[in-house]
Image (cartoon, rainbow, N blue to C red; front, top):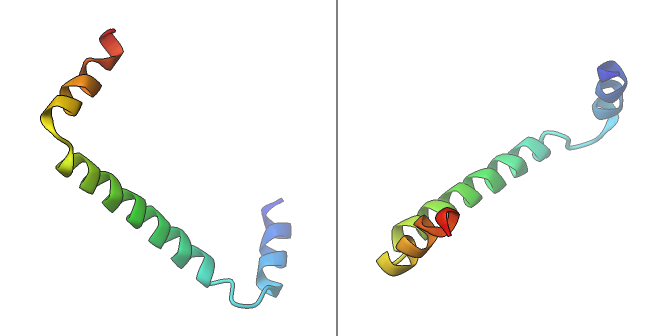
Length: 54
């Protein structure tokens, strides 16, 4: 099955851009989550921390 996908992918032009787009999306999401965690206030943090116990 993989060789059929590989043959199809080899015929596509500019296919090397897709891994770069995936990497940029992953890192932008990761940086966004880190920024959210750093800027969260303490009351909201305690609400989210106790959420599974409620």
